[in-house]
Image (cartoon, rainbow, N blue to C red; front, side, top):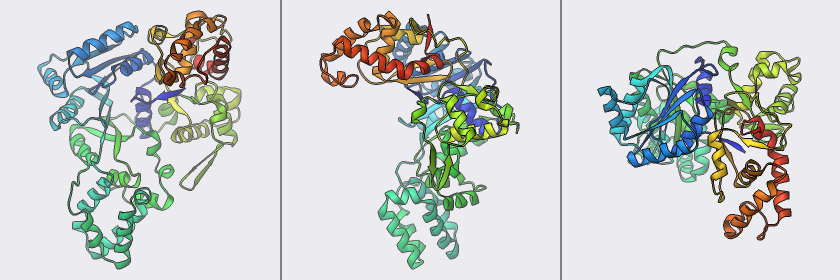
Length: 498
């Protein structure tokens, strides 16, 4: 089981909180729209995971809208609506006062897989300007460069013409320090750079980038969004907001020296060897605070992997983080069992003797390292001691009973996580059997499904190790999955006692 990161409101608010932006408080109503809704089912799952929110998805045409709405109705999701059209048509409706959208707290625009036209991109930014509330968050995902060397090409073309001879030589040294990840993959460019440095002839290196596209989508985003009243808050990929964990020490210094440069984000793109970006922008005016309890105390945190799968240390570009220290060890022990907030941990026996600031700092490191993640709530009602007749929680998840499972991952909604949880086909089959027949009779519910899958060996191989399923195989499969996963299923609100 793992969390599917799909621009969920909790993660976006957490990113903004890292920049001091006061987050929405748990339980407050909000509105959320996706202007490039390529996966309506996933948006419905997000809506089911955040019952206090109203969700809107813009799909390509009326057929897509009708299909998405019908599927949401089948799965009992009532707080999601779908609109048909493009960002341009939506903007025209907003201007005319006929758009079926409220003001928004979150807006998503994702063109990382399929580019928008220039007109649709401009319209999407205009929609963000018109509809997002103060402190509202725009999550804009896109391909920042058309080629692997795009960031370096852009920096060379922007900076080299303005340099004197000495500055150009220093620039080559900085390019080498910044480009460890990129140059390691592009040996030809690394050789040209080393030769130009050795001969003290920067122009020989610059000539390599004299032709071809030199475009930066991240620079274009700044140019487009700053005048519309937006401030950059960080990357939706939480780990990449921590430069000290993302690049070597010598690279960190060069990046820090560029902090006030207009090309700071492009320098980071090159250092991180990043062509795809998922940015979080906040709508002005912004309410900010330095109070850690206000910024991070309202989030819940959890670890979706098992305790045994959590590493004992993390090494990132020469920085060693020992996760066996008391505060880390106690946090991981609890969070791998069930999600908890900062206050929950401090009031738990595991939190005895730790200061709140120490716990907040340790939690941020666990999130930055991708071990823990911010979540929406703590599951308070489920009884994990009663597994005789577990039931899937909510209409979205109960639809699993009606679905033929044919391999591959499936998504379930989690009001604890505040987003989609991905489960394997093997786990889904066991959950389906538990929903249909309870634990005592689950073998009789699972075996027919395994026999159905056995007719397609390629599919069957994804969930079982034998060609001919038997009752014993079904029983072993249920025992394995239940012993490994059922506590987390209850903790994340996927199951409840009937």
